[in-house]
Amino acid sequence: MEIIEIKKKALVLDKDEIEKLNKVLLWFSNRKINKMKDDMDKFAEYMKIKLEEMEA
Image 1 (spheres, rainbow, N blue to C red):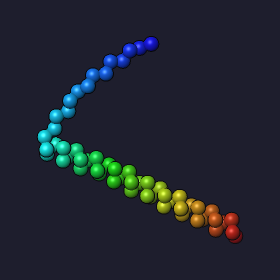
Image 2 (cartoon, helix red, strand yellow):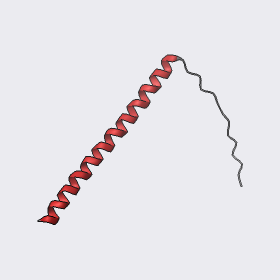
Image 3 (cartoon, helix red, strand yellow):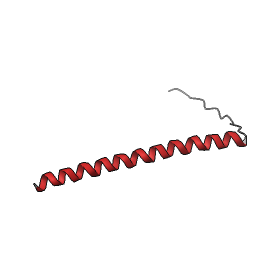
Image 4 (cartoon, rainbow, N blue to C red):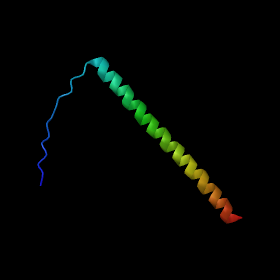
């Protein structure tokens, strides 16, 4: 069995860097949320079509 050594490193950021990082993280999370909404809309549309086909 291998022993993996994990070293902790401190990340020191100034205020500007923290703000930039937060903007990037927010952008990514917003993008992910928007993609999820798109996927849900597509799925809802698909289900609507399937229901119409079943009723026909």
